[in-house]
Amino acid sequence: MKFKFLMSLMLLSLTAVSHAQNTANDSAKFPDKPIRLIITVPPGGASDFVARALSEGFAKELGTPVLIENKAGANGTIASAFVARAPSDGYTLLQAGISTHGIGPYFYDKLTYDPFKDLIPVGALAEFPIILAVNAQLPVNSVKDLIALAKTKTLSFASAGTGSAPHLSGELFKTEANIDLVHVPYKGSAPAVVDVASGQVDMMFDGIPALLPHIKSGKLRPIAAVSIKRNSLLPELPTFTELGYPTMIASVWYGLMAPAGTPGAVVNYINTALNKTLAIPELQKKLEDGGAIVMPGTPADFGAFMQKDYARWGQVIKKAGISTTN
Image (cartoon, rainbow, N blue to C red; front, side):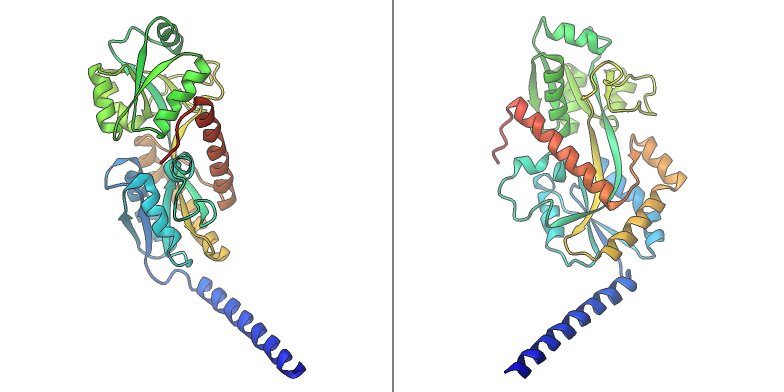
């Protein structure tokens, strides 16, 4: 009996060692096939722009092709669930963002996966600072003017949809400025910005790529940036923090995540390749010309950033009394 017990222990030990050796061997030869980068939106838009701008240089640094796959729908939950169920080998990555790990989890209480347990951070990519722009016919030229006007009449703000970063930026502004604004949600930024430009809605918070064409045409007037630093595309635009609103900080951000259980050596290999890619001057310029700011760092940096952003938006949602039933 004692002999059988000892044999069982030996077999378990050998199995564990074999598994560890196989994992180490798999990590050592990584990558030996193309990597799939899963995007949460259809082709086009900021998320797709970042992925495709990144892919060529990223593939060179990784030493293997990077295949971009768009799996759109349900605010990124379809793509997230797909990657969460994928093998934990580093060959399937998710381009996560504020919709999947910042705001989105509050609006989906019946997910088939846990956003923070079934997916692990690999590294941040870039963020698009949000700005506030008003219809050019609105008689305001500053945040101070806008707040004063909002105290005398009912103003409206458009967004890409309930629960989106632009929506919650507006709710945060209402709270910080102690004003009331009527929220007008749309199915995406494109139709929303058209109605603000035409005067159907008074203002809108969104990323610069969506607003800049209408700012250049003179139909929208930028008022302030919802970011810590001024944006290089609109350097003359003050930030809310400069104007005395230090908590008015928001951005649409993106980063890479892998299935839980992916070996640490693989995660670190991908992260190193990612940071080298983000340091390429041509890529930085391409992203900055599109309104983005690169966010190099470690997996731990990205994980801490996500948790902080997630917690902050939870407070905004609770304070604004926004329904999260979905």
